[in-house]
Image (cartoon, rainbow, N blue to C red; front, side):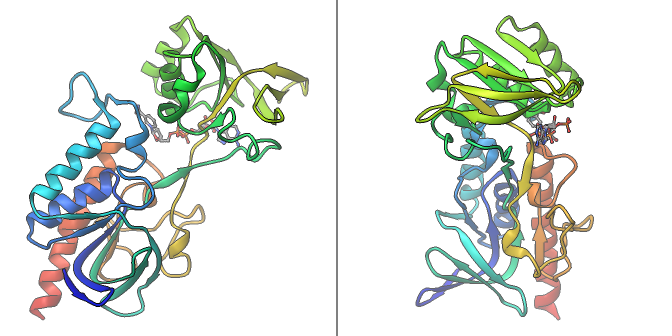
Length: 314
Ligand code: NAP
């Protein structure tokens, strides 16, 4: 990295420090490109908010999300990657080197790998915003502990809902999963585990229409989508796991994106701008696993290396 005042020039700038970003950093570092990773707001990305990851190969009994993130980081740093606690706000991809404005200043980058991940979706019902942090949460690992011997509701029917619901059974007296359909999207193993767990209960074909409480959550208003029946359900906690939205707002009108906001990449992780690559959940509406994000990150870094070789030799 070369520095000129507050402006730094790097060969490979990686935006985001989840599995995609840190895997890209490992590969770019081993290609001796001295990559710089900007952590973004969440070091380790969403994986670092997961208590145990059971499907990342090499860890037969599972591995803690934060621990896996630290291992990724250490391995990349061992080969020369630099991880900066900094967040990008604005990019200019109109000419190379590309410009990235961050909290701490400005980077000029010969290549950029975007691995900014995704953020949890909100229900958008009355009371949700006001009661966030007062009973409403989007992170079981962060907040599960606060619900010792309390009643908790989970909303969602995917892997996250059931996995995080099972995690909260460590603390809560009961965990009720409320799902808008009568079938779960989650994988078979998780469904079986959840259905067999004595603390887990299920309310199906039902949506939450309001989070109720003044200074803390006390109940939810529910509506059965088939019968239209409305009920009140008393609860101390509401954990919402209804999918994610990619963190790509910064790239609107700068890169080609899908209608849902995912950055469009080809099979080499190339975006429509030469030298700008994307990997992980910011560019993946299909798989969204730690292993697939890590693989995309590695591929992006290999392609960035080839791109630099080609442009530097021409
Ligand atoms: P997801 O698979 O997209 O599931 C979201 C769930 O929320 C769906 O059941 C959906 O209902 C429901 N939902 C969406 N919008 C809603 C709304 N407005 N109101 C009520 N319910 C709503 O999301 P995810 O569970 O976060 O998983 C994301 C990805 O990560 C998936 O690919 C998943 O396989 C992966 N993941 C894997 C693991 C694992 O392998 N252990 C763990 C966590 C996540 P419908 O079903 O009716 O659409």
